[in-house]
Amino acid sequence: MSRGRADPNPQKKRLITWIVVLVICCGCFYAYTRNNGSSALEYGSKSLRKFGSSYWRGDDDTADSSTKLDEDVDDGVILKSFPVCDDRHSELIPCLDRNFIYQTRLKLDLAVMEHYERHCPMPEKRFNCLIPPPHGYKIPIKWPKSRDEVWKANIPHTHLATEKSDQNWMVVKGDKIAFPGGGTHFHYGADKYIASMANMLNFPDNILNNRGNLRTVFDVGCGVASFGGYLLSSDIITMSLAPNDVHQNQIQFALERGIPAYLGVLGTKRLPYPSRSFELAHCSRCRIDWLQRNGLLLLELDRVLRPGGYFAYSSPEAYAQDEEDLRIWRAMSALVERMCWRIAAKRNQTVIWVKPLTNDCYMQREPGTQPPMCKSDDDPDATWGVQMEACISPYSNQVQRAQGSGLAPWPARLTTPPPRLADLGYSDDMFVKDTEIWQRRVDNYWNLLAPHIESDTLRNLMDMKAHMGSFAAALNNKDVWVMNVVPEDGPNTLKIVFDRGLIGTVHNWCESFSTYPRTYDLLHAWTVFSDIQRKDCSIVDLLLEMDRILRPKGFIIVHDKRPTVELIKKYLGALHWESLATSESQLDSEQDEDVVFIIQKKMWLTSESIKESE
Image (tube, rainbow, N blue to C red; front, side):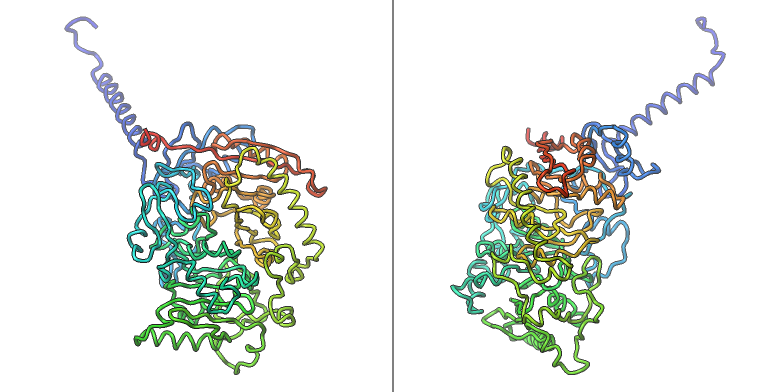
């Protein structure tokens, strides 16, 4: 083009200019959305902040991300990394997430606590990302010191310390949170309260375990679980239960302290425990209306109590003299009398009822007495997704003949075949053999772990497929506790677990577990991945869930078929896991094709945490 000459194509020049401007604007918009993203609380949205290179599915993809990840790895691709969830998800519990309930507009009855029950997102709406630790996270304080103090940075919530300051639940002390052992009804310490209960029942030496005859306890509305924490020294193990309610993080504090605990609620569905699981149920100002729905919740306690089991109730209704409390007390007394409970002891602010040993009292009730007996076809041990019924579960013929549960005192109970083996068609020899096999397996596990752990490294353990609880039984000489998880679709062996003096729950590993992130030191996965594949569920979802509930520096024992183990190995780098040991399983001929694979989760930080620490 010569100087001063008119441009023959002015429209083309303007078009090119507009294209350049549009490209620049789109680039700026893309950079902005990458930095800010949409709301991190929006399910199924592009809400993930990348941690290095990542793989993530957008809403417009045709296949769900878990399936795509499985296919990629099956094709030989080794995943480089998973994205990291937004920091606001550092305490995400997918099946107990109120944000999910709000956004999906589930129609739930708040009056009966349905909003505190499990509501799981569909696979395509799950967060396929790693849950980050909170800023300043530290490796938890070791047991037994952890019973009395934890790092504040690990659970940065101090509202309970303020709200319950007059009850000695917890106290903030610098970079730690201390637990003086108080509770809503035992301000001066759980130890004194426990001794007082034993004295009320005339137990020897004021020790609540009653020479091993009282072993398993259910503490409903447990707070930070100091009651259960102080029972451990008496060889009593407690399932401490509380919902993810306005007292958020109470169960998280309990598990951080190394005390057995579980997120749950007395709502509309049965508790995830079989009938006759506990020798004692406890409610200390647990804020439960026991009279609602024809005594439904009290009848659920009745279902899980053993013959001759106790219900310790510390509440204003047991001692106050105002009109409303007296009305509640009279109505509750009448209800438990029709349930054949009687008062074992009542002193000051606590009443302890005891359940009958046999069916005799039930059979002597007048026709039409409420609550009724449950129907003959009702299975009192069925729990997964089963609605509560306002009826009394009668005892089996075996209990009637034995006039009680027929269990040995603790610790003999751990290795003595329990009577309910017959319910499953198992023999005493099968029980003994299972115990012996798992003792050998656990000895092998510990030989592999030994170079990597100290005596106090492990505290909170989970057996993801517990069967009869023999993995946990083999660890009885170690200062650990085990959450024994029994599959919801297999033999209901959880009753055997409880009859051995252990605790556990029912679960389906195609879904997320009811616990906070970073709550277990070791996960034992015996053929769990093979089961997941048979169910056509996602191994990726399970790996991410295991990473969520495992503490940094925690361990995983995978005991499974070699091809399954080789598949898991392809995800180690993406999960920031490290392979520690691999061993052939040659301890029993039935499992000679299995491999034992020991993994450790690395400690990692988000970029924000790194900046903050600098």
